[in-house]
Length: 183
Ligand SMILES: Nc1ncnc2c1ncn2[C@@H]1O[C@H](COP(=O)(O)OP(=O)(O)OP(=O)(O)O)[C@@H](O)[C@H]1O
Ligand SMILES: [Mg+2]
Image 1 (cartoon, rainbow, N blue to C red):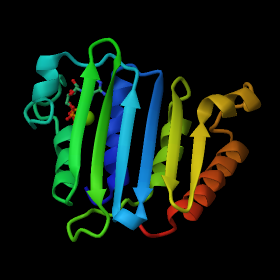
Image 2: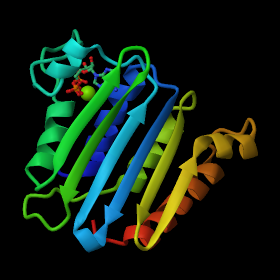
Image 3: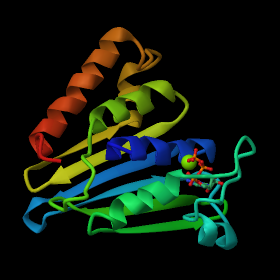
Image 4: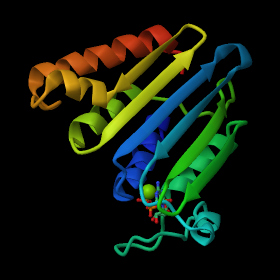
């Protein structure tokens, strides 16, 4: 993939397919160490140990439409080929956590891309799921918890043009102050 943000979208789609009600997405940036990590954690159906062991192999999928699942292998590859690491933990009935770590300055590190756009898309397209998005670097931190927004907005959906415009700006302003165009 050309943007890590699209990997994030893809991995989060696994969580949604697993029936998650709450998805946490965390971006932790350490400019001083030239590293950052992405975590995606859900409270969906999880996987048993056997599935978990096979899951980063591209021929493992529970999809019936095609045989190859590429989401996790690609995400793993994006990290391991950029001087980073990848791990996944899951418990049947409890949920799943995927962690990827990157060396920011590595020549093969894929740009983060439109992370804010992906967050906006996820929260507006999935009204029945809550998202908690945390982004932090040495320069600041931002938190977006859809549970808090829903409390304030009541019945007004995130897709309402004014709400959507507000969210877009809120997300972009936060991201700019935390990592600017440096990822
Ligand atoms: N968060 C999760 N919760 C429960 N099961 C998961 C989760 N993520 C992945 N899985 C399981 O691992 C399999 C492989 O996931 P992966 O994203 O690699 O491929 P896929 O989703 O099947 O296909 P693709 O991502 O290419 O559309 C999934 O089919 C699903 O059974
Ligand atoms: Mg997938």
